[in-house]
Image 1: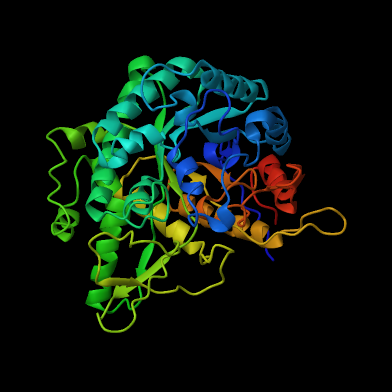
Image 2: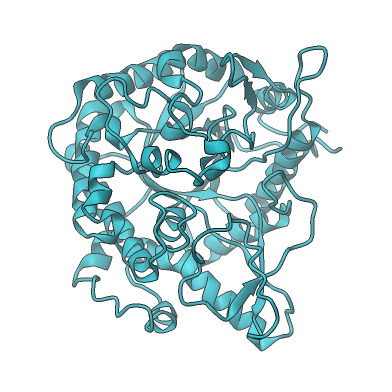
Length: 470
């Protein structure tokens, strides 16, 4: 196992870790919190592994001060967390819930007292159920309700927040939530998924406008899980076209409006048989195209595609759950094949070169745009040793190799300002429940006791030396 190359990172490089509200908070019915789509989805039989829910999760709502102690002891320069919309506005509209606001205000103050920069994600998938009942992200009004919520949070937390992130991985919200049904709200409606894509783009722009209406100098961002898609046969024009089609859905459907102010023409053509995109109104893409201070990039693995022959069994090894439908709307003649291993416990391939490739692509297509790795990490089947420790050398190796890959992109000009390990804690891993462990810190779900894994000790040392060992 290699744990480093002796690489050092620039002075001021921001080291952090990340979590999400529904995955760690628990207290699902406390403090005035309303139900989210993930409460409803996880309580629906058969939707999550073992019927697991986020009702308790890591109980961070009650143990936040303990968790801030771990954050400080790790030496994190920043902590990326999400605020739960239904904790702030239980029904997704109307007056704010004071108890919810106070929780996040205390959390931000606690971070600042420990010298840690708060990085706030406004939406990490826990849409208030009342808004889903009214149509969810497939409905335009949801984008305006998000802007109201963003304005409330900006007014409450103010300039104490270092960086405001509008959305986390809108690809997952739109396609896994509304096309495949693998995630909440569990709908398999391709046209609705594309409407959700647009309304999430719109919400991003409206959200930044709302935050800056309160805080004109606010630093703003969005986090995208940009996909690295490769052809099964690089010499095949059909496989190369499969890459283009998936890239349009996975990447350019978001980077187009958000970073360039327009949808790519090939995306509209590829999906014309699904929808006429009439939900896009004049001025919408201009609203989505707000200046951002940094682009958040989440990266875990790569994808491998080819043109499906329409006869043989179709391979759908895209790294996501089997579900009601396919997330790849309009790409019915594309199949995903299993890339070369090794793999994590999620079944995702480990390929650090994809991170270098991705960062350089963003650098070349959007010169001068600063980036941060806002999620990167790996799930493995961790066990507690007889000595009480959690030895996780594969996670250390995974992160070390990806840090080196990030550094290689920086050597070639990519402007990367920070790295956030996913995740601070083992947590509720969506449809996989509590079976998949991504944390630097182990959580015993019976006692809720926190135990540092070897990777946490190692990451603390990386932060302290601002780089990898030799």
